[in-house]
Image (cartoon, rainbow, N blue to C red; front, side, top):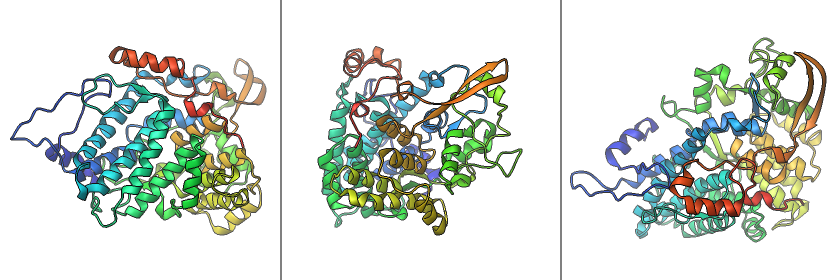
Length: 498
């Protein structure tokens, strides 16, 4: 099945649920004998994998906000306000919220309904449960308390906002139950419909276990981490990573490629912080992650974050003399989107070992080395350079800061996960320039540490939520804290130090 045909097939063979968000009325579908009221589960599965794995509606938020907040990227024209975080508009917030709930979750829920009571469809039902958790964990990690338990119930017009702690507990249980229910003697989705793992149930099990490990580490659930580490049935090499491979069709190709091809100068530059960090470590991934500047093809120069327009002018920076992201990220039409990589799994296992959760601290160094190696091999770094790197500036030191910094490097341009890890740990230690200017003349510059309290902690809710679901919205705000950028989500308030 070709992705370019998905929209056509769904339009012909399915009724997609297109209500605007979980807060609005879930109207009953009138039965018409001349039109189908159900769709083929294969089509639905392909659709939700495409929308969730391709992250088309999430691209702008990742590119323009999360990747800049976590200092993967920066704008060549600076910011007119300090800090620049207020540029996250309600239009973008509502668009992302509605995409998650409408495009992905409502169709996932329809798939669950179609397969739940069919004993022959147990694997289809289990895979839909896994994808539902994958989607919901992105939502709750961005907003905190959100509609969850009642969000997809057509009989409930105003769903409650569940506490994030309860959401995490249920997601962890859902993943465990979904894996346990998989029956290798029963059929699953076809190879064509399953555009993530092409019908390979073993890979789905490893993906679910690895996702469960991510959630358990993030929420500090020692018992589940220990259980998973003892079973050790995770993604175990780069070929098993959850990579969404984009097709070449105009509608569905890699959004980084699409944007770079059409709006090259607006895609943003590589952050100076990222460039400096890789240079300090003598990291061979630097020429993979960043292109040479347009005016000097032998030089990679990053664009500093958190500068206003006057400071950018004083530094003399522009899109010509600073570096774009690497060609393998923005100029490859088929470049995959890494949803959950083998490298990340290794770093999760490293943290579990350092905490003595199902593993010994003595195993941490090997897990760490495996994680760095996996990232570098994915980026086609020669083995000799990997060996030298791990014996040199990146040699294991057993600290949380080193571990999360290496995870941050490996997650390059995955703003969703890097943003979550920064809020959880305050690593890497972000830095910015503190400048004194006389007009456009630099009088003094000092590199200072960014206070984590000044970095956003969550997304505000869509501004029409108080109107559509006022009672539950107000209850969520009372429990979680003010509905603004700087309130922390639940797991970010936990003590995650070793």
